[in-house]
Amino acid sequence: MGQSASGAIELVPIDEVARRFGLRASTIRYYEERGLLHPVSRQSGRRWYGPAEIRRLAVIRYWQRSALMSLDDIAQMLAGANGEDRWRQMIDEQVRMLATRIEEMEAAKEFLEHVASHHDAAPDGCPHYETFIWEQPSQSGASA
Image (cartoon, rainbow, N blue to C red; front, top):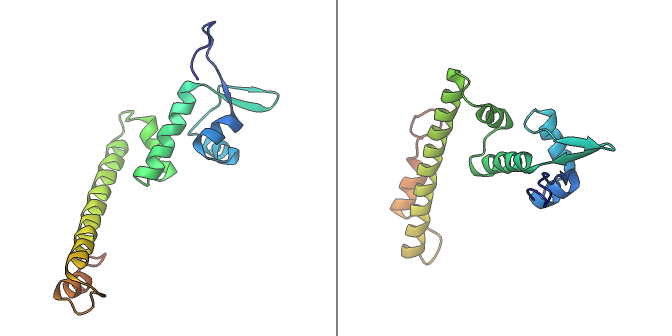
């Protein structure tokens, strides 16, 4: 992918782009409907993409997998700030959400490491286990 020897940008058909990303072509068309992606051209009804569009698709897929962002949030992020406070708020919200998930995953990892190093059987009755399952804050912030 890139430029050919003549300097022209090499375009890739939708089916090839879909194959490279392990997607269905219908998923790429859906991203187009949402305004996230646009083909460079259409020839005989077939969509063709250049390097910039393929890179944009890679960004969309990265954020879906890595941060579990919604397509609306991805669209807003890709659009850039444009002087809007909502863009910064969305980014800050995503950072807070990821920090919370990291804390939760670290706690779960520590618990599993404790179980692996201190138990030969199920951890039921272990004071550390009981604390872990009964003293976690609920979604509303109250203790269970």
